[in-house]
Length: 546
Image 1: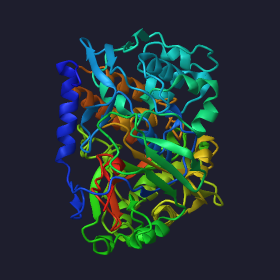
Image 2: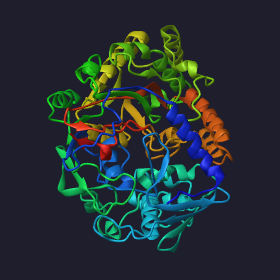
Image 3: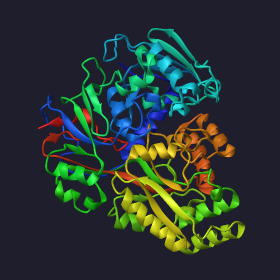
Image 4: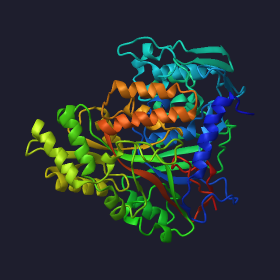
């Protein structure tokens, strides 16, 4: 069944698909193979403990996200190259890019056998948007008319006026303004449907969710801090049908331990090679590795609520810290050249990327300029001699401890201050601390795109009140420029405006961009058909056992 919409919207998908197809990388001989394998065996893979219960609108980190994308499906999904493919959508149509009519396929069900109707989408989106439900992905519904009312602090309203159920297979969406790329977002986690049973006890549902994706959570399948076990969902009829007997995610606290397990064939797939093995992984896993760029980046957040990083002195200090970091040295010494220094806030594999934005020189290493800017800030308000600039990060991720320690040493040396890593044991604990908005220093950050668009690297991270705005950054001029870009009539015009918004970020530096990510993954001798997608995530449903 075809995915139908106006020619304007089709242009978005076509341009994005071409941009992503153009990016390349090194792949071991086993990557992307179509060889037949054993479709009954369970595949094992690495992951981290999900931060929250498994609710679509409350999952915005990779540990929970990779599970959600397998146990749920939305209106559309993205193939390996980032192109849209139908899931539950029969059609998504618009004549003005503001009013959309969405028809879903009839006869589809959740894994418990309950019917999927238009109401399941409308109710789920309203639940995700309403302030009273405090969902981290609420910001993704900002475009829908009435979001401002349901999302206002203290609001008890829970239905956006822009959503209407027409019948069991049809609903309409009215946006607050025309946005031609709206359909492109609808494969993201926040837009998944939910069964009626969710709302009886949402917290309990998050521990044992009922989804509609290619897999479902096994009975008692989420063993916290140990593993997440998924089994095929025989009710699923979409394009991502499971080609194995299930996926079990082992929740590792050390990427080095995971790498050793893959070498000994005790783990099937590892999506992140630790720095200690980057020099040798292509020979350790000859024919069983991937090394390719994806839509992701690494940054360091400097919260806007820290008094010493506000106003003119804060702007100078942010610039000084950015220029004090020798990104290329860290890439060469710790990541063995397997990343690319950032010159903006997005990713080179996304359509509209511009490597020559005005103001991007602040992202270049310049020790003399860094020191001068820091001293200029001190003339406004001196940095206390005993104060330590801390960078908070989980240390269970590949390379976090190593690169942040190196970065802190560079900052200390080039600015003449004390700087150090503030180590947190797990990713979940670090996210909980960051979300509390009580940091006394900077924090490690990174972004894996939710859908292939420049806006996805900007709005959810730096828009006022956005769910992934770790540093509480707010600038009305930036928000206005984003809104202007969203309402652009063409993708090209929108991208130009989004890049103008980036020029504001390059002055304010709510985060310090570090480098663009690349997927370095390996797999055991026990599996075949391993392929990594546009966002750096393995296509788990395609993997088969030998």
